Length: 307
Ligand SMILES: NC(=O)c1ccc[n+]([C@@H]2O[C@H](COP(=O)([O-])OP(=O)(O)OC[C@H]3O[C@@H](n4cnc5c(N)ncnc54)[C@H](O)[C@@H]3O)[C@@H](O)[C@H]2O)c1
Ligand SMILES: O=C(O)C[C@H](O)C(=O)O
Image 1 (spheres, rainbow, N blue to C red):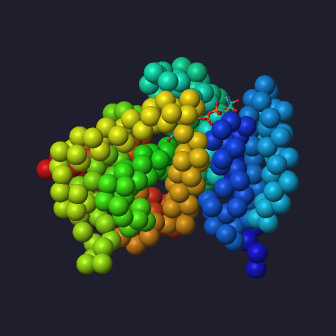
Image 2: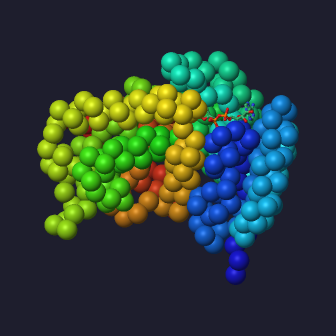
């Protein structure tokens, strides 16, 4: 029997991440190839015409899984009945700025959208904040939507996680799909700590530690870390725009693993509220290693990087 459609909200849908993300969702990249979806797309009035253009393209693409499109500048209409909310709406930083420099503009958006989600989203809606500063925006959303369970509010550090996998795979000339269990600790900012101390690579002789295979601690403790920390800035310098296709893909990975589960023996990085694990103050939104099953994440314990 065909599944009921899932309603997925994308805010900032007329922007560049939105333009990369909505076709991925409509193709089943986020929720699976047998899961019908109804897309809710929100943007602000100056972007209304462009948003309508995205809607026209979604119709023209004739995605078999796409059962409806709501394209609106009305936050209540956008949030009504949504099961998943991907919060991309906001302003990206420009070259030379830190992500916290867009804080004033973006945080106020998350205050007002928190109450719309709280009042109008489906019960148990899962929320992913992408817009920067992502951890702070998620924290604001959590504080201003107290009836949404804390465990349902997360922010994106999967892009950093995927960037770390990508750097290891390039360095070792192995398939990125053979590398797993890196960890991004902390904020989606240049203060994050990308950790390879438990990461492994699948080889013909079994799983081997990344540190052993790379055999270059100076690179792993230096250039590797700064490359991952600074990758967002490097993309902005190269493209004159911030990352979009990789951010959209990471958002799909984040939601897919949260809803459908992480593979056995694999963890991923998610920005989630701290329960005090690893002595991170309780209530902060912080990136930890997590496994997911039955639609719930759990922080992986015992992977402390301070030895
Ligand atoms: N967490 C991550 O890994 C990650 C990665 C890449 C980008 N980002 C962030 O994602 C955000 C979006 O990036 P982008 O490149 O798509 O930007 P963009 O400027 O291309 O698109 C943002 C869209 O948000 C819309 N918007 C602004 N205020 C809004 C509001 N109140 N409600 C709804 N929509 C609103 C804008 O009109 C625009 O269409 C930025 O903050 C960027 O820094 C985060
Ligand atoms: O770096 C940025 O400002 C955009 C995004 O957060 C990224 O990491 O690519």
